[in-house]
Image (cartoon, rainbow, N blue to C red; front, side, top):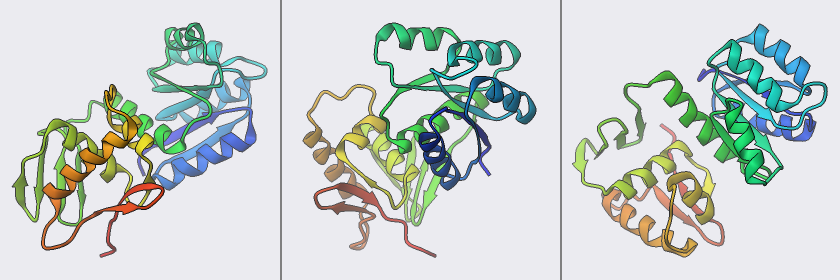
Length: 224
């Protein structure tokens, strides 16, 4: 179990949707639908992460975030439909660690949550291993069949994104969003990045990164 997540969201459809994705990713997840019950659950549960809607009944998200921040160092990710920069700044100034605007991709929420938790826990070493491929994110090294492989920083970041989302179809836009803070090219330019990475990690005719035509790419993890 990766940890416990408290989702405070008054839209039950969104709350249940996000809960399912966290559970699929290996987290324990609980839901509250207003600010006051969210505060009570946070105090009782002591979660590892809070995913918090900015606009909540009974106690709004900004005030709830401020209370949680006074009482603990729990990582907080805010979800909101508000797009104005001032609203994003208010959310961050109230103590949130990250901020995601609706509508959002739940897989991006999971990836950001894991990144926030890594920063919060000060993880010394993060090693991803699937099949013959191992990526050590601390030493920035990759091996395939136990042999070292030289990858650029962009290729390392792209491979890490694929390995954090095994067997999931990722669109070009998702790959860009999850991998690069700043991407100068247009979305099709990611194809060149993927092609170079595939050449580096292919062995004996086996290619774990598959093209899903009309959709994107998938890192295929074969069952043992």
